[in-house]
Length: 268
Length: 96
Image (cartoon, rainbow over all chains, first blue to last red; front, top):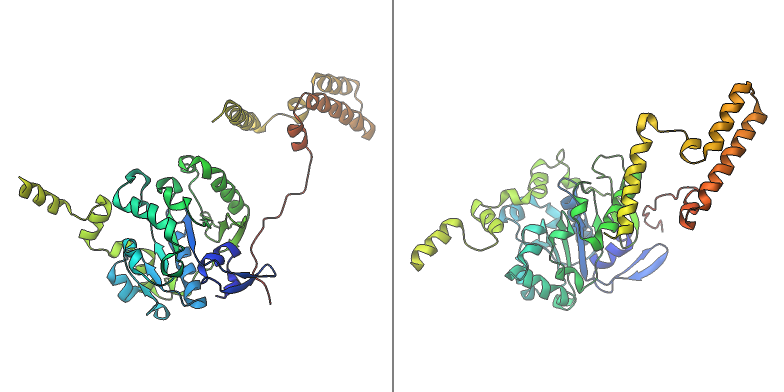
């Protein structure tokens, strides 16, 4: 996967700041910071697309990659060999501690940064982080996957450069999308339908900033026929969290039900 | 949703339903006027056939559609003009 193999708006955020590449016959200089939301329904290939972007970062830059809140097991056993030493798992709340131009992957974001949790600690973190992404570590990039942008706290997208990727979205769900965004999503579905041979449009994706379609690149290590274990770890990483961690994620706090009930007893 | 958007949505739903009634209705009934129907009936009763009759029927249809379009907005009139469909724009990496 070469520098020129991604649409310009995506390469612009994934390459390191100042890195040069040629696209559409023009030499460009990468911005190297911003947010790439990947939007699509379940099983539309959002996470696979995110890994393809990380593969691009690994092969074409020296930027570190951080997989937000990924299970240790996945980092130890699930990542391909050539990613080792480049990929780590930290919490997005550790953002200020990272002093390198990292590329973050926040997978299945609606669980963490839900718009209904407005002004919870994680939403506050996002609101602050969006404004300083370009300053920390020499400019960071965040890739996040979500089923609809209506589930995401908008403050995350207000203050920085955004290059959205849109995949298949269930037509009965589109009506729930944000009104500022629903026209773009509908256009994407129309464009994908006009070229795709897959019922869930997984062979193409729509880049709304460049207003163009692009062929999906599916990394070899995600193919279950080639690497069944790696493919499963990466395609369903959340499955490999401990039960305790899963409960914490769903409850949106740091205490399990058992711990909370203990807390009540102690308070009494 | 504004009233105009609501009306457009209702128009689309109504259009979609009527087009599906037993395969839809003929365009000269849907888009032209009653002269087109009576003219066809007269030609049929007289037993006339041939390319010149087809041309006459087409002319009546065209006049009917023109009368209908006269009352429509410029946007609707433009939308009826046939045009080549744009090819989807698909990203291709530079070769060099």
